[in-house]
Amino acid sequence: MSEYPQDLRYLDTHEYVRLDGEIATIGISEFAIEQMGDIVFLDVSEIGDAISKGERFGTIESVKAVEEVNAPVSGTVIERNDSVIADPELISDDPYGEGWFIKVRVDDLGEIDDTLTSDEYRALVEGE
Image 1 (cartoon, rainbow, N blue to C red):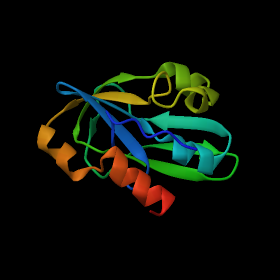
Image 2: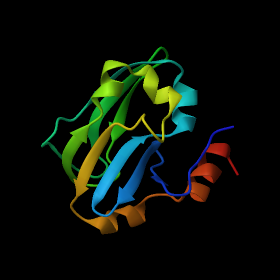
Image 3: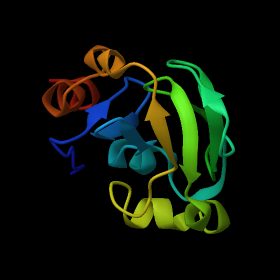
């Protein structure tokens, strides 16, 4: 059974965002990881890159598929998680903790209103 932490917001494409003031931490949900299988490669935007809500900021590859990773908010990348880029298996071990992808200084905090709550995301992926 997948976890859906209440302090996160989600996209229907399975990315999550955790806001801490104007800083957003972005990764993918445990549900997405379970669907993908073993993750073998991650490529994300560089520090200083601008990302736009709904647009691709990277790709994630598993033994089953290559998927785009989309931005839940617009902003500037201020940190990349080099640990998961070097060892993508870490994403599966702790998707909501050490398995994050990038941190972004958010341009418009109101964009978070267009994301799904934990309960909405759970209903979407579990078909409730």
